[in-house]
Length: 100
Image (cartoon, rainbow, N blue to C red; front, side, top):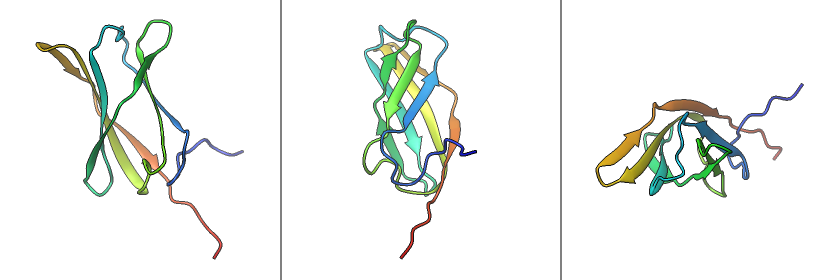
């Protein structure tokens, strides 16, 4: 049986994090990403779900460019004085095989 795994160069994969609280009043929401090579990027997820507690990001072209262990840390701003970082989450992006 095939497993649903993210691979290098995938497009459309959904990265989803349940924050366990309502994020609908947030003014900014980000996923801070550290790639396996140590470089960092920021993805901007959408707030979704019936309680507004889920953050979702659809992987686009070029987002998953390196195989290895990636780290994601959610960040939410509700106001200038109220910001929150979630716990870091690790996930694996797999390399793929190609016939030459």
